[in-house]
Length: 325
Image 1 (cartoon, one colour):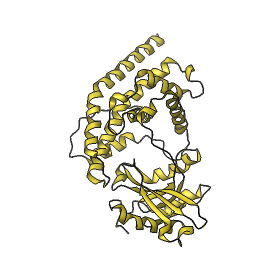
Image 2: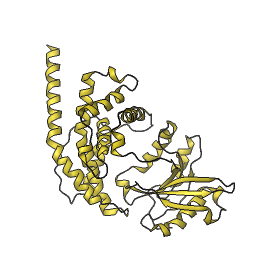
Image 3: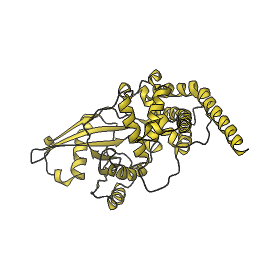
Image 4: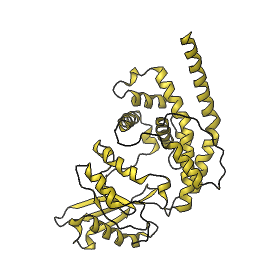
């Protein structure tokens, strides 16, 4: 079905996930080629849903509707709406992994994490897995745009939720994978020569630096990114969700420097991601153009960000020396 190579054993992953979950995770060995046009994908998706969810297995195909969900540029996202025998309409999201996205995402680790994040109230519930994707509950919502993210109340709430997100306890290795991922991307894109240097920083800074870059949107209008005051507002609510005004200036500056330095990692990560996607993804998106937008910003910001980090480290070392004398 589609000829797509399975990148894991869907049955085994579903069993492992269900073993420590309150709900059953359905599984299927079927796979669907995401490069097919929607008219060809639709009957395959219907067959997949019938195979995953036995309560739908005897429904006529006319009970199913399949449409593309905008916004997915790593995976192909589909909304499947099913009219059940009782007359109720039920919608699920089918996520078809893009070719070679295992270079970008550890899919097995992702599935293991989703269970714990869902239990904590983050994201959609995992309902099923199959040869090259997953099925989740459908969330009726819209994607935030840069102007939304500049709203102080919304920014504060996002910061609080990001703090809570980072506190979710997920079993397994806590070793940061950022540099491993970047080096893996380089290996995949080794024909492209890119000047890159990095240090040893806390992985948290990448998450926050990546979030601030989202203010620019897919078009990468970096003039929309938050200024220092707006970043401090966000960081206060991240560090002390219940008492943001009690955050010390020392802690604010330290995290501000860390996340600004990590914007470089964010730019480089998504630039290399763009190259990989440009080679393999069937999704209609200008990945190569996105690579140049992110990599050019990396080069533009590089010296300023490292200068900020060097200055902060130098002042910190001086203060530590004075404290010891």
